[in-house]
Structures are given as structure tokens and as C-alpha cells.
Image (cartoon, rainbow, N blue to C red; front, side, top):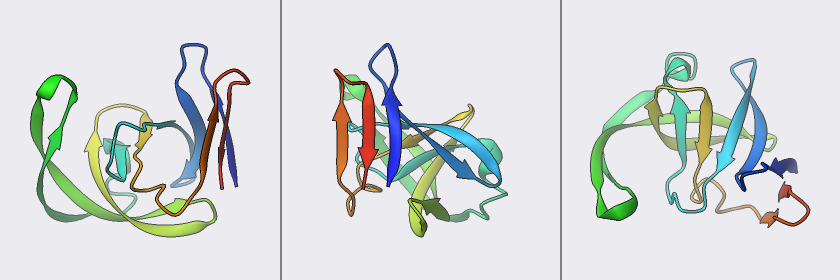
Length: 115
């Protein structure tokens, strides 16, 4: 079970330990992929290039990105995830990574629960 919070501006957040460091992770229910990770984790997670993918963005835009396979620690398990890497210090969690979990976001109580 993972517990998190909803930020004052309405963003569901959890904290994950990845490669020996604590990372803020945003639960993005509009992202149907697995993960978007900080570029600095690419070598530490031994990312394996799997090809180019097209990602749909808001407003009808799309971009092509390099996709990688990584073994990612999540909720006491190590999952094989498809990821993209970006500059920044936050992890973006998509709904495909959560497909075997129950997600509860309680906005009035500002809480997040993943089981």
C-alpha cells in the first residue's frame, strides 16, 4: 500500500524510493502509459531502448519520443515498465502502471491511496 497527498493546487502526489533516493511522483490519470522519469535515472535503472513511440498531448498535439524498458520498484514489487525520460526532478505515473492496483484520490481530504 502506498499513501500520498493531494497538493493545495489539486495534484495527487506520492513519494517513491528509486535508486536510493526519494522522488516526488505525480499520479496522472490522463496519462495512459507507464512512467515518465527524470533523465538522471536512465543509467541507474539500466534502461534498455525499445524504440520510438508517439505520445498524444493535450490540445491534439503529439510528439515522438524514445521509449525504454526498465525494472521499476513499485509497491513492494519490481515491475517491468515502459518509460520515457525528461529533464526534471519528478516522476509521472500513468494509468498503465496502476492497472493491477486500486487508486483512490480523495480531494476533500487531500489523500491518495494505492493498493
